[in-house]
Image (cartoon, rainbow over all chains, first blue to last red; front, side, top):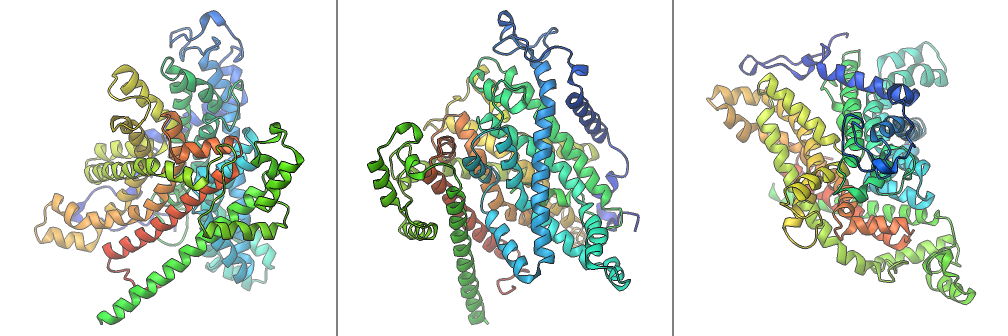
Length: 307
Length: 318
């Protein structure tokens, strides 16, 4: 099974099927990958893209609109917004990655308990996840912040935990599907120990679709975390972090639009890049030998959205 | 025949109500234990936090009144019994009954959310019907609009809308008070991301429906392309999106926190944010329970609607 199973195209309605588009690399995918790579460069070596000091204040140059000297303008202290955005990429991305990691790890733990812990455990985890679905993502994040108090670490944990129920449901389904597959059956017949089957056979196969899901999740996590920062509950203003920049820009919303527009644009671009990469990974992995008609592009992306 | 159908409906209703009640009770339990994890003395928090320097007598009085001196399980019992009487306690910060605060803020947020959901459905339907299986360029544009719409953060969209339509053009006010004009920008802000998600789901199922045998046979009978979309395929496209509506409502309540804060609009979301900031536990509990209630009701309603729109599922199954 190395090819995508595309449904027979009806001659009356002959148009490209969704699956066919993904075989070639699209322009959008190239742009997304280039953007993602520059984000990583900005995180690792911000000085390479923006040699200036992100904390350098110049009171005389405050509130400069975008110009050649300051492509994204300057803020209330005359700091260069472009430099601050580049230097903020690292912490913003780190928050997104860490939150996704926390969400996936929690979800994996829940799903493993549900699938391998017996019927009772499955029922308990299943009901708990169902109840957690009644809490919208931002609300559960706010509950976590209520307990931990505001701050960047709390916001990261909050975003991570609030995405866990959605991931848990998907991972559980994936684990169940792999457990029932022929190759797990043959591993059992070969006499491999249960631990070895779970670690070497089931997990790698069940988790490979997660790569796409995690990529989509990082973008969403960056948006949620920056929303919390914008509301004053995440990273706090002096830090050159995108959400924190937005939070301090809120006061000047009507007078200095560039303070909000450019950090927001970067957040949007990050989500767009991760969504594009995630969807294309998802569509490509669907052809890599998963059984069943899961070839519908973006299928796991839909259900992977935070609830 | 009709008798067994009526019976099935009664059984379905009973099961649904029971299930909804269990989810609500579990939500209340979960919130109760999460709020007990909040650090600090709850009696002190009730009197205005550590800065209030409350006397020992006052603290004791509060402890007795709320049962903070009782074992946790007794406190839980007290809280659940109070909940049955719709008594959610008194706000630490506002010194008002939480039920009163909810009654004041729910209508504003409900208006916002319902209008946003309707607008999102309209935008998603227009987007889906216009670009699914249209030309290659059309599909590419539709795809991009979908992805951008679902990725755009609320706070950013709101800022752009304010900059363009309030500051530059002065068409709509940047502050959303009681006037209808003030509702436009918040509703659009909330609707756009939802429309993106709905359109994405709708397009997948519309695409599938247009390839289904019934579509071919409709075309063979002489149905036009437009007629096929509206009379036959639309029903199929709407189903999965309908299933998403309960989720969408939850997403709207989250979005309301941001939107109500930006547009300085009184509502559930803004009260929640203020309550979280000052650790006003009763208000947070109240808002979370209201949103869980709305989610549960919507899940039941969309489930029932799905069964009505798609007779294949039927009321008897499961």
